[in-house]
Amino acid sequence: MEVKSFAVFCGSKTGMDHLFEDHAEQLGRIMAEQNISLVYGGGNSGLMGAVANSVMNNGGKVIGVIPEILIEWEAGHKNITELIVVKDMHIRKKMMYELCDAAVILPGGNGTLDEMFEMLTWNTLNIHNKKIVLLNSNGFYTHLIAHIETMFVQGFLYEQWQERLIVCSSPEEIISCLA
Image 1 (tube, rainbow, N blue to C red):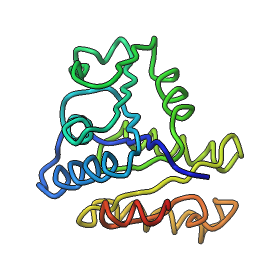
Image 2 (image 1 turned 90 degrees about the vertical axis):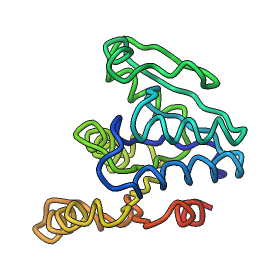
Image 3 (image 1 turned 90 degrees about the horizontal axis):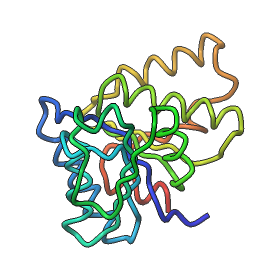
Image 4 (image 1 turned 45 degrees about the vertical axis):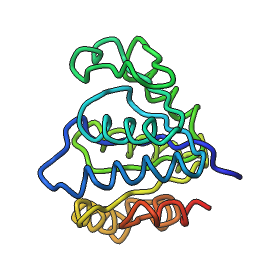
């Protein structure tokens, strides 16, 4: 299946390591160059804003999906291709999954992890079979990856987790993993 759109889940803050924002901007540039549309949470702050602005600045297409409650908090992005306002977070996540061909997880907080684990769970349950890529920028997710391995070793996962979650260390690697 040809990948024409990525759902990118990431922080509405930039974090402390400048590499996180650099990777978000690099990913946005590469996506625009490869004609891969961005589907994301619709915000204009943090890594969300960085990846969206980069896609737009490089001539790409960006679809934001934001729930009413977060329009003020995440500063709904007004300079993207399309901003869809939905009633709640559940509708947001479902719509993002439906609009994407694959998902990319950048550094972020609780919301980012919620989105990643829900997508992994849906994948395991065969609700969808979209590839999920975790960008481990400067080791940000190393401890989480170790914990997921522990869940597998301890018998809590039904299959090797690497069958569902691809780990990459650079934006360029994401494109080659999904090609």
